[in-house]
Image 1: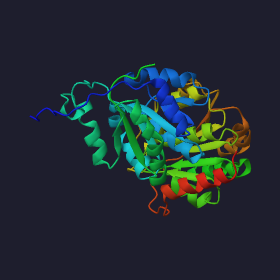
Image 2: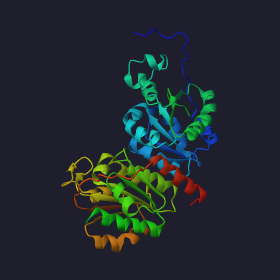
Image 3: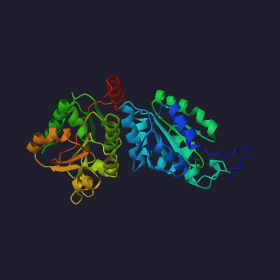
Image 4: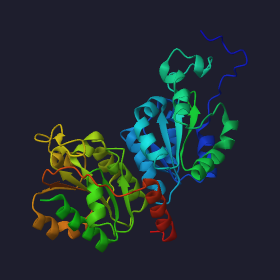
Length: 177
Length: 191
């Protein structure tokens, strides 16, 4: 068993409005969504943001394909999905985002995470295995543990754009209005 | 009808309409043989089922350009819910042309589940496509295709094609390069 991390700093909830502001700084045009409980407040804010177009998809596979089409069409989309959704669409991430070299930036809610415990120590595979799964495929992941981490979102977006590949921003606990 | 006849007609219509096009799986080699000069074309390979979603993103991102996706019945079945997503998005400029022969040609013509029982036209209508039609004759496709592409979509065409042996010769393609080339062309001339 892994010893508990002693220097672990629990996450603080992200403000939905600060997230929207960060998307604006990154010049994001569309948010392609498969609903995620962790991002509930954020999704409500996207729905009323006049300068962001929300695109609903039934599955994460579709979301990755729609993102690619919007990118080829000249836009700057981002995905909002859940950890379980990443697991569900791995082949499409491999086929389109990695092999097709399509910038695919994903806001990923860490459904099931207990904030008092580092994700790598979670008893739940859906929590514990997200970052190792992404790492196996060479997909960079960054944790958003507080509003101050949102300052890095535009740089993450531009890095994915320049590298032409996928990137994940992990949201560990529910966002707040 | 033969697949190559259907693709001759679809390729010609894309040229006339200045459409964006996407082909997948066994339509790919035939498209490149018969319609390879159509600009603004992309293939979707190694990711069965994703052509319709790629097409939806293109259609939403370039609403003034028609987008024609040449899909297969087996491929569409792998992401069948994309019909619902497309219907919900009301992508007016999207035409989903599904080559229907009830088999997975690539892997040796095994039967597609529902190939004899599922009704793609009814499914598309139920998903919110204002136009969904089965087309069994070459002459009908040739006669109607320009009008269909100009109509308000999303549109699903279930095109009955013959069962054929899978292609053995494939063009040398790079999806990665196609994506970048089409993006560069679209950004140079915003729609």
